Length: 183
Image (cartoon, rainbow, N blue to C red; front, side, top):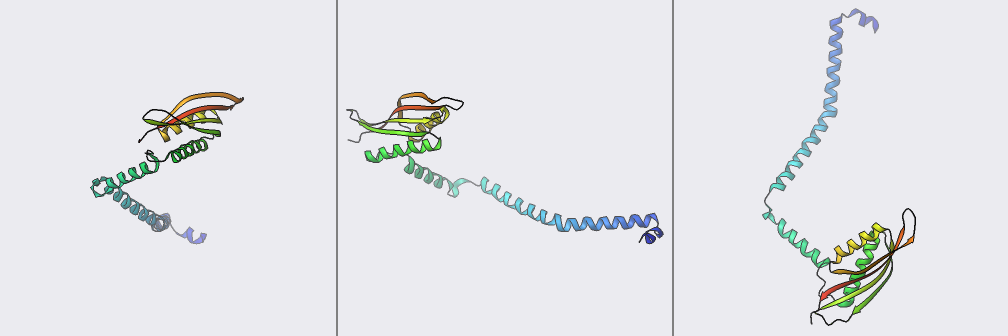
């Protein structure tokens, strides 16, 4: 093989090397570049389709669907005025419990108490004892307010239960929920 290469002059060697590089690049483009370009073209087509869909006017039925979703959310979470008092009480207790799970707060006790008031609304009072970190308790309060909306925190007393780097706090909370009386 070396004897054959010795007999070729420099111009012929350059021609052979150039041809080999050309064949190698052609093979790379055919087996590597073509599939990549095909995927790019497909993705570009999908992206253009999504952009066209985003620019289309919303009179194709998207707004009524959004309104229907909002109504379903209101039905599932919202207006509780038609619930019997025991179901409303259960709903509030489950909201308190789910917020405690979400923010790693231990719900030690819940004592519901119905207040007899001569007012045009009903008041449901709850006395709670909670344990958790300061931020957990703070986030729990915000979550309960966001979920129930009509809750008033009448008293909130914090005590350090376990001191340390991450102290565990004990909280005694009295809160009330209100709704209009239908009578």
